[in-house]
Every structure is written in structure tokens, then in C-alpha cells.
Amino acid sequence: MTNRALSQSPVQRYLERLHAELRQIRGGELASYIPELTRANPDWLGIALVTVDGHVYQVGDSREPFTVQSISKAITYGLALEDRGLDTVLGKVGVEPSGEAFNSISLEQDTGRPLNPMINAGAIASTGLIADDAGSAPLDRILETFGRYTGHAMSVEEQVYRSESETGHRNRAIAHLLYGYGILERAPEAVLDLYFRQCSILVTARDLALMGACLANSGVNPVTGVIALQQRYVDKVLSVMSSCGMYDYSGAWVFNVGMPAKSGVGGGIMAVLPGQFGLGVFSPLLDPKGNSVRGIEACKRISNEFGLHLFNVAHATSSSVVRQCADGAHLHSRRYRAASERAALEIGGARIRIYELQGELLFGSTESITLRMLDALDEADYLIVSLKRVVGLDSASIALLGDMCTAAETGGKHVFFTDCGHLYALRRYLQKQLRSRQSPQWLEFAETDRALEWCEDALLPDTAAGEDAGDDLGRQYLCAGLSAAQIALIGEAGTERRFSAGETIVRTGEPADSLYFILDGRAESWLEPAAGSEPGAARRLRLTTLGPGMVFGEVGLLGGQRRSANVSAESDLRCLQLKFDAVDGDLRERMLVNMAAHFAEMLQERAALMQQLA
Ligand code: GLN
Image 1 (cartoon, rainbow, N blue to C red):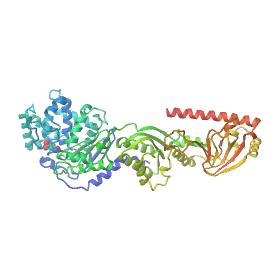
Image 2 (spheres, rainbow, N blue to C red):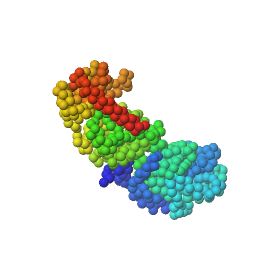
Image 3 (cartoon, rainbow, N blue to C red):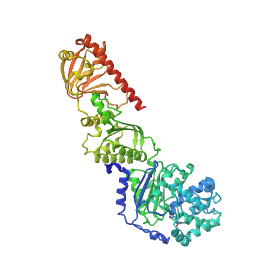
Image 4 (cartoon, protein in one colour):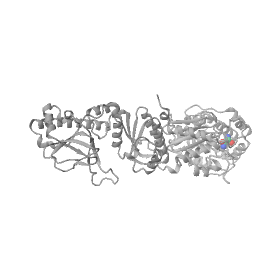
């Protein structure tokens, strides 16, 4: 059975909550100066978000078609730039915000040049610049261009087009004025007709989000891979959107929302967070400036709640935030496991997934990686996320990771963040969010290896027979092939020793004179951190943890050795200490052969691991 909490992305859940909240907002009015627009249903509310990876999220009336209106201005401006080049277009249309209403007649005094392409005057001038000698009619070229942005064929809503054409006296006046100044070189009626039709192209909130995602993705449609706009003009279009896209609300918009955006009187808003996503909102009730009331609110909340202001994210998103991923069948903790346990992990270990992330986590990259990790949790129960190589995260990423944990835990899964001592904001957030967790606090795992060990331990009682009886020396690898009499001899020659948790048993550099068979409890072998290692590095480097049925210190049997590592009791520990001088002749030879075979096997495992990591 798939778990809904898991299969749903945090972004989808967020948008659903946002949609429910925004539905309560009732202010605003339908645009009435184009009579046909009053036929819209004031309740409609659709929100869509498309990431630069091509993930599409949508809620509510996101598939409801409506006319694009002024949002078309951004698209036709881009097309005019492609057709005529920057200089020609700049000669006809400026890039200064007018701070005036969309239908203002803001032209430069002497030249008649409209102030910018986002007000009607500049948009009509831009439409007039679209090539009409390029093999197909300008309207077809506009529709084809829209189609590259949306990934499907586009059409004009005839009623709205006719309604505007019959009543658009102000736009008519503007077009004639532009013609008088020589800004329009073609008959004003033809250009106007094209402009009215471009405004009446039908789109959905999903289309707007995808159009925005093309602009966020350097002009390439992230779903189809088609180039919607040549890359060199993407920043130009986004610039005029950010300074002029919301008419006389543009300054406050950049200030409050910080995403280049374009609104239309049909009720749509297309917003762009470069490098990350496009956002499309549709709700036809407008404020007095002609912007969708709920649309503005949606953008504001998304921006503020996730800290997505354009100027918050100075760095491009890296699409490769996953440095490595592995599962517990292939990657083992340094805890030394008995053969039966290793065999069990080989089968059950896939229920542990380990992701090592790197670089800077921003909304866009984190969104796609949380999805991947939640997907992985469909088949796994334990997720370890190592953040050692993550240099920073924005508040959106923190929220997404936190939400992923909540979803995972609701589904009965465990998530651990490791090596995140340097990410203070994340630690604070998680501490607050996850206080009620039943599994150990993520903070206990300064190291990935410890988290992995915990997960293995949690898995093993399910899959393996548990820990081997330590008291049976015959099961020690060192004793393989020995006769019962020889084993009994060892039992007699050895001394039983008890150590309490934390006690150190052997120290690096000491002469080696005995080996220890572990009968009960766990021992950890470890090294001091290398001189000059980073401050804040782990207090000590764990080499391995050994349990009942295992032995340490046996390497000294090779002769003349000093201890090469420290060994401490990790829990209360009971061992059988065997002095080397009690081991001679046949017994010693047998043990040396066993040791050689054992080390050969370990070398093979290392090689396999390295192959895995390569
Ligand atoms: N077609 C409309 C006009 O020119 C577009 C206006 C708008 O969406 N702001 O009046």
C-alpha cells in the first residue's frame, strides 16, 4: 500500500494548504472594461508551480482556461527582441518603469517612445515589431511562441477578443499616437488587432507556471526541452518584468515579493524565481490596479514563508546536490558484525538509505532531492542524510527538509541528519520541530557512521538471529579448525576480564602481549584525530565496533608488535584475555593461518566497497 503522506511532495502539501487559506479571501472585482471578462467565476482559484527540473505542482482551478491578457506582453517582448535585436527594440520602447496604470499613455516627450514594454503603449509597440516577413503570419508566430513555452497548441478566445476589439478605444488612441510618432511602422489597426488577439490567448495557471519556469530555466522549457526564448534575452525580459511587470504596484512588488512577475486583467499572475521555478496563479477578482487580489497574496505568502526573494539567492542552484547515495546492503557501519549479521544486512540492508548532500541547498534543489528521498522511503524504513559537505541552506530548504521528516515519521519511517553541527539554523529548526520524536534525536549522530550503526541495530533483530553467543569460543574465527581439546585449553589458559563502559583496555603504542575474545558487550577501536585536523572534528575516529564472538588485539600474535589503535569498552564488557605466551606450537600456527584468511577476506570487502564508491 502506498502511503499518501509519503508519496506527496512537501510542495504539493504546502500548495494545498495555501489554496484552502486563500479561498477565504473575497475582496476585489472582475475586470469590466472588457465586458466579456465579467463572465468569469469569481470563486476560481488555481495555483501551479513548475520547477526547473520540470516537476509540476498544481492545486484548485489550475486547469481552468482564461485569457492571458497583459501577461502576453512579456512573451511578445521576448519575441520582438529575437526578431529585431536589442538595439532596434530599445530604439522604439524604453525600459523605465512608468509607475503608472497599465493603460496610461506614458510616452517620452520628444520621441513618443513608450516608457517600457509592460504598459499597453510599450506592448503595442513591441507587438508592432514582431516580424511579418518571417514566413508565417505574426499571429501564428505568436501562437507558436506561446506553444513553445506551454508545450501545447494555443488558441484565441474569440468572444473576449471581439469584446475588447469593440471597446478598446483607449488602446486604439495609443496605437494611433504611436503611429504618429513613427514608433509603429505598420498600420495601427493591424497591430491593434494582433495585440487584442494576443491578449485573448487562452492559458491556465499551469501554463503560466510552465511559462515562468522557461524563463527561470534560461529560456528552455524544463518539461519539453524546447527553447522558448533565446538565452541572451531571458535576463532582458525578466528585468522589465521585475521593474514594470505589476504597473504602479511594481516597486512594492519587488520589495515585498521579490520575483519578476507579470499580471493580467484576466486574473492571472506569472512569477519567476530565476534558476528555481515558475509560478502561475489564477483568480479573477482584481484590485484597483488591475492585479489579481488572491494572486498577489499567493505570491507574497510563497515568497515570505519560504524566504524566496530574488535577492536572497545570489548563487545559482546546483542540480547536483547529491554527492552520493547508497543503501545499507552495500555500505556498512564500522561496527564489526558477525558473519550471520553481515549476511542479514546484505538482504535487509536495502531498508536503510544514505544520502550525502553537498553544496548549497536552495528551494529548487532541495525540492527535487526531498522528492527523491521520499520516493526511496517507499521501499526503505531508515533514511540518513549526511550534510557534512553542505555549505548552507536557505529557509525554504529547511522547511522542506523539516516537512519531509514529518511526512516520513507519520509513515512510520526514521530520518536522521548527520554532520550538521555547522548548520545552526537547520539544527534549531529541527530541534523545535522534532522534539516529540520517538527515535533517538538526530543530534545524537554527529557522524553518519553512528547513524548507520543505529539503523543496522534496529534492523538486525528483525532479520538475523541476533548476537552470537560470545561464550562459545569455537565460533571465534581465530579458533576455526581447532579441536575441542584445543579450545578447552584456551578457555583454561585465558583470564576472564570485565571492563565498564568507557574504560580503555589497550592504548596505541603499548607493547602487545595478549588478545581479547569478546564474550559479552561491545568494544570500540579508535584513533586520536590526526594532528592539525579541523577544529570541531570528531573527538576521536572510530575504526570499528566489535561485539560478542569477536576478538581484538590478535594482530600482536604476529610478534614484536605494538598496539596500533586504542580499544575501549563501549558498553560494559566481558572478555577472555589470552596472553600470547600461552599460545604456541600447533595452536599458534593454526591461529596465524586463520588470521591470514580473515584479513584476505577483509581486503576483498574493502575492494568491493571501493568499487561501489567509485
Ligand atoms: N488587453 C488588456 C488591455 O490592453 C490587457 C490589460 C491587462 O491585462 N492589464 O487593456
